[in-house]
Image (cartoon, rainbow over all chains, first blue to last red):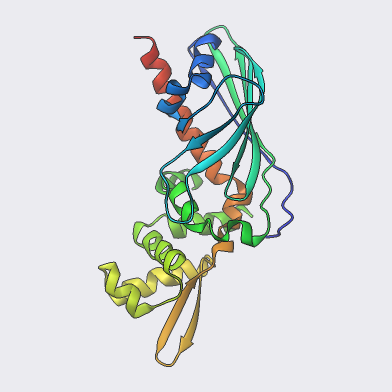
Length: 140
Length: 107
């Protein structure tokens, strides 16, 4: 382990049997976002700063600081994602397919900063990985 | 890297171990006795859990007289942060919820 972790990219892709317009609504309308992701004050405006809010736990206030970076209706959405000493960028790409939409999410730019940056966040992390049993089942 | 992350994941996949680790993270160094008193399980069981946490480098121990003291090693979570397993699981889970929402939006 080092403190000079390179930038990394996480990519998850799925095809859903729904139109890009509908997926776009789920990604950009605050009340709909809350239903699948988190409470938020998202606005579909480039440069808009907003928060996602999860339940606070000791040493983590549950807040993710974001800013809208890219907004191309029904096609591309991107926002910064800053929490617990890490800054990254989340980018959604929607591509129409025969039966619906290919949805791609990419999260880039993880920097594990110095120890101190996440020492205080330990307890928060254990909350964040609350679904560990399921994760472990996939590892084997 | 992946093997290390697996150790950490497996160590934290047990609710009792997670509770012990959270307690050490929150309250600082504790003796095995103190951890046993609050855990609702036997001391040998607590010691076994601590051994697994120690193996994953999530805790460190030191002897003082007849007591062993344990403290959390938060930097051991670094493999998770660097490896992004956490976010991988997080987004897959959210993706499931997104699909559920999309289904409901039809109605």
